[in-house]
Structures are given as C-alpha cells and as structure tokens.
Image 1 (cartoon, each protein chain N blue to C red):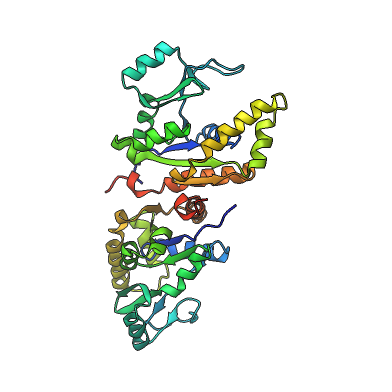
Image 2: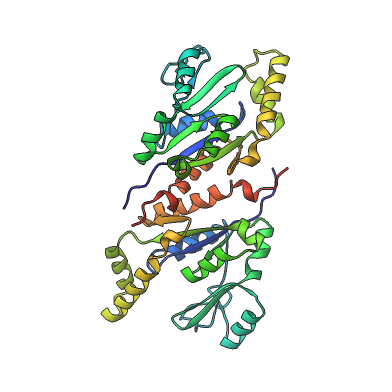
Length: 200
Length: 200
C-alpha cells in the first residue's frame, strides 16, 4: 500500500557459525542488498574486488576514515575493516533491505550510531554455532591446519561469542535449512515493523 | 540449548481483517496457546463455552474484575470482555507462546502493564484489511445484513483502524496464505529475541 524504509540487518557470529552463508543466500535470492565491506587485508585466492570486499590500501582506508566516510570500522587481527555509509544509506532510503556481515566491534558501532536513518533501520542478530564441539569440527574442517591454528581460531570464536547477549536476536544454528528459514523469518517480521512505515 | 520464556503475541484488527483466522490457525498447528477471553455477551449459535470464550454472567465478571484477576478488560458495544491473568502467565513461564486476539482497548492495557513477566513476553500486531473496498466486501459478505448494519460495522472498523500506528508490527492483509506466512514469521523471529533467553 505504502512504501517503507529499508531494514539494516546487522549479522555477527564467529567463524564457523554459518553467518556468511546465511547473508549471501539472502542476497542471492534478491531479498536484501549485501553490504560489501572495505578491508586493507590482501585478497585470498578467488576473492574478487568489489564483490567479496572493496580491497583498499592502508592509505586509502585512512583517507576515507578521516573523511568520516565509514559507518563502522574495526581493526581485526591487524587488518582494517569498514563499511562505507554510501554502501548503506541510499538503499535504506529506497526501501531496500541491507544485510551487513560484520564483527562485534562493528556491530557495537552501528548500535551506538545516532543517525536517525540508521536508528530506524537497524536490527542485530548474533549467529551461534550449535555447540563448542560442533564449532571445533567446523573450524578444523579443512583438515589442512595445525592444532595451534585451530586452537587460536577456537579462542577467537569463544571470545566473540561472549558478546551475544548484547544483540537483539540470537540464532542458535542447527541445520542449514532450519537456520535459513529462521533468518528469513526475521527479515519478514521486521518488514512488518510500524516504525519503518510511513504514518498516513 | 536453553529454555526461554514464552511470547505473548497480542493481535488486534477490525472484524474482516482476518486476525481471528490467523490466531486460530496458529493454535491449531500447536504453535501457540490461544488465550480464551471471558465475556458477558451471550454465546452465538455454535460457540462453545471454554473453547470460544469463557461465558460469564455480569456478576461473575465483576467479581473477577474486583479481585484483579484480569490482565486486560474492555467494554465493547455494551458487552464486557477480559483476559484472566491465569490464562496467560503460567504458559509464558513454561516457555509456551500465547496468542491473544483482543481489541485496541485491551491491547493498550497489555502495553501499559508493568508486570515484568508481561513486559518481557509481549509483542503486538495490528492486522489491516487490504483496502476499504475489500473490507466492505468482507463485512457485507454474508449477504443477510441490512445496509445500515454493514455501515455501522464499517464505521466501527474504520475507528479501530485509526489505532494501528500505536502497535509495533502491522500486517497488511493480502492472501490467506501470504498473511499466515508473515504472521508465522513474526512468531519465529520473536523466538530468537535475546531478552526472552536466559543469560548463561
């Protein structure tokens, strides 16, 4: 009947939680725009600039940071990550939902943001692996990494998972289909939210 | 993984919005307990005491009211309606979701309630008919009522619909299946809400 403004669905969770798969599937189904982050880390084999990330030099990143161009940014394991405001705000104003796959530091910044367009749009979700045991299995999955590397990933994941109570929603991962059904339900429900509808 | 407390899904909307069908279907699928209201109005043909309503005499209703037994109550077209606290609180504590099909006066009382168990549980939805034209068709549907009766129903519905901006969610009715998909999505999404989860 009447247009609404978009949802900014902020999704966090440790490596191995399956959050990135959920976010990409939503975008693949054209249910939301996937917000592409900037990063100073080097592309991994197969990663495409402008698709997986906007790969920036440290100088380029710092320039944008100084210009206030980032909605959120974080330093993770020595690399900078950030989301440009321009990646998000236009879509929201047009009524397009945006999904952001970001870490707990970034999510905290989005939560602290006072821009009314962001306040109106945002909703945050933490995706949890089903159990520590399953998380370990997922992080060790590739079978090519040392026990030390896996132990470090576990430690990082456990640290990140301490933050779930600061989120509005939590999805406890079970099966891939069940997870996606719930994830999609969250978007559908948020589309009903009155605070994003025009008052006639 | 861990138990949560139940959702109190408060659903309002005018006659002809389809809200009652949505609520009953949720209960039929055992997705929620349908909260049965008390009323002083007489049963209509086919209505069963303890199933459609708890039918009370005016004296019985007033006694319970004086005892503070009602979570919400309202006088609608000369009849009293109310929901007993006992109909709701036990289910919520057990982690059972409860759906309440109540009018705007009742919903406002649930929204104003300060009982922490209700504050934690509640979420409200207004179901809107797709258009005035379609609403009129639905209210006239039975084909047995006078134009005056239909006009009065329309007037009541239009008055009730003014209240939708006071709700958290609004469902604009389209098809029966589409409506139920969204309604169910709201329940699924609310099941992810952190504020109803135990903090480990």
